[in-house]
Every structure is written in structure tokens, then in C-alpha cells.
Image 1: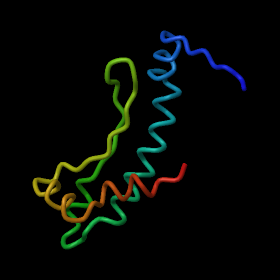
Image 2 (image 1 turned 180 degrees about the horizontal axis):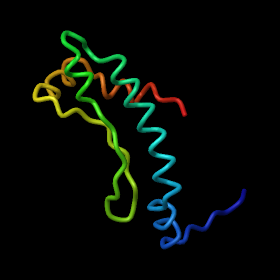
Image 3 (image 1 turned 60 degrees about the vertical axis):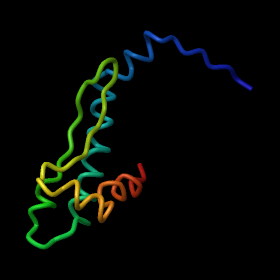
Image 4 (image 1 turned 90 degrees about the vertical axis):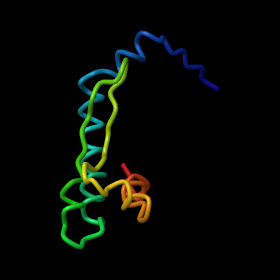
Length: 91
């Protein structure tokens, strides 16, 4: 069995690199698109309020998909739309 030695400074550099941000951007876009497509649609406002982005948090880049709708948290609790979109991602 091969051994892998991780060097903390190098791991942090990779996790915060432009390449990682680009990689995450593609994933976030896919999850956002899926969440918008499968969102509950009475008026379409909830689906339109779903967005995704990548930001730097500490020593790593993170991808975030969320809604800014005032009733988004309630809809998410009722439907699990964002969670299902994340679960459906197959990269």
C-alpha cells in the first residue's frame, strides 16, 4: 500500500488556489441550475432567488448555493430542494 504524506502548507495552497475556485465554480453552477429547475413554482420567485457562488473562507475556497427569498428557509424545510440538488450532483 502506498503512503501519502500531506504537507499542511501545500494542502492549504491547493485548497485556496484559483484552480480550486474554478473547479468549485463548475460544481456550484451545476447544483444551482438543478435547484432552480426543481424548485417549487407558484410564481417562480423562489427559483429566481436561488444563486450560487464561490468565496474564500480562511485557508480554503468554498462553494455556496442558497436562496435570498424571505420564505426560502420555510420552503427548504418543507421541500428539501437545495439538499436534493446537492445530493443529485454527480461530477
